[in-house]
Amino acid sequence: MRKIPRVIARAPIPMFRLGLGGLLSKRFVMLEHRGRRSGLIREVVLETIKIDGDDVYVISGYGWTSQWLRNVKADPRVRMWSGWGTGVSAIARILDPVEGRIVLDDYRKRHPGTVRTLAKGLGIEGFTVDGPLPEDIAERMPLVRVRPRRWDAPIPDTQRAVSR
Image 1 (cartoon, rainbow, N blue to C red):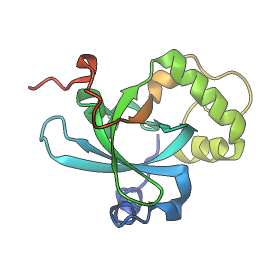
Image 2 (cartoon, one colour; image 1 turned 180 degrees about the vertical axis):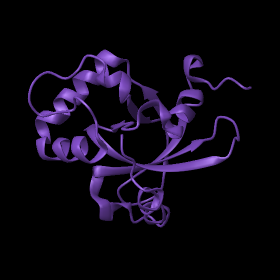
Image 3 (tube, rainbow, N blue to C red; image 1 turned 90 degrees about the vertical axis):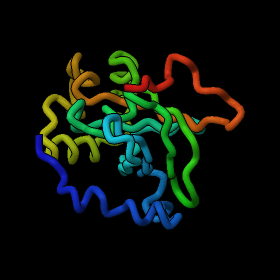
Image 4 (cartoon, rainbow, N blue to C red; image 1 turned 90 degrees about the horizontal axis):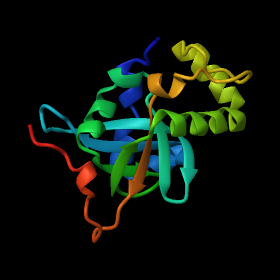
């Protein structure tokens, strides 16, 4: 699998910090998450693959090697920037593979050109426009639903970070 150079992947972060994420449309979001080992705040810009009301779905194109994915698994409390403005408190939930595959299948039907570009550019085996998706695709490229949370809503016990 090929990787996007770090300098290019991180280039949009200052735009979101300045409230100018709207220049990238709603196609991209920035997640602020906490490092699972260091405890430091980290930021990543991700492409949305689905927006459903306030919920935003993103994919880990590099699978479990992505540090942001490992970090939100350890502590799902994040801040999300989307469009213009500042970040909102949110909860990130990694979808189970069956649910993730359904979202991916819908995405490839709605955006065949993007799927072709991503599959070729990143060397993602089996992520094609035609034919069935491989059974393990959502395990190799996990999907995450990011849901803004109200300040008065407690974090469910099943999603609290375990201190190490």
